[in-house]
Length: 241
Ligand code: SAM
Image (tube, rainbow, N blue to C red; front, top):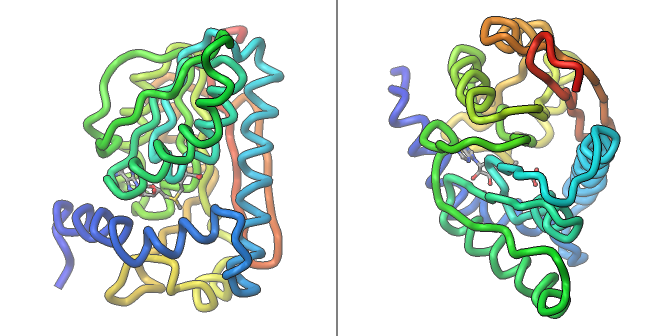
């Protein structure tokens, strides 16, 4: 039977509070207790984070801008953004992830804080559909993979409504992937793990953005052996930004 929306979201949340939390914390960390596939994904994901930071730097000064990192995971993006002076809201549906991100931020940043112009990210447990507020920039990296396109459309619309200037999204492209899913299926919530990772066609993402008045301004593609991501930077149609 098909899971209802609530069930699917609860399954994602439960996964990232338990098995998924342990797996992804290892992948996003620096310990050597990772297998070859996990190490490859670590490297690919780090490139996505670097590419996102590069796009944000190219768009103008990061210091002082308000940024929402939706689905922040262990803080891989939020921490370098805060270090560069952004005012960051780091939120995630998983309380375990948020608490890990907070600990990592404190370990990485607190020694630097007293005399520096930057501030700790604000941490919040929230699913991105319930986020509100208004930010210069909203970033959502490697989260859409947990949602089918019809739900991704609503998420994209909602994220765009929170952003004043730009929205960065990364997603697993609907190409190249059959093999990938079979190999790394264990990294996604069950029960039939390989069916619980969703790929997105770039044109569907582009269309979801267009419907709410946004256009893609920059694109990136990151690939390693087991990790593939498209990264897009979107801006409101008509904005010169
Ligand atoms: N964005 C982070 C990064 O790139 O380092 C983490 C990516 S990780 C593969 C996916 C994250 O999305 C997990 O931390 C998970 O808890 C979170 N997530 C999944 N569904 C979510 C939702 N509906 N709202 C907020 N976070 C969600």
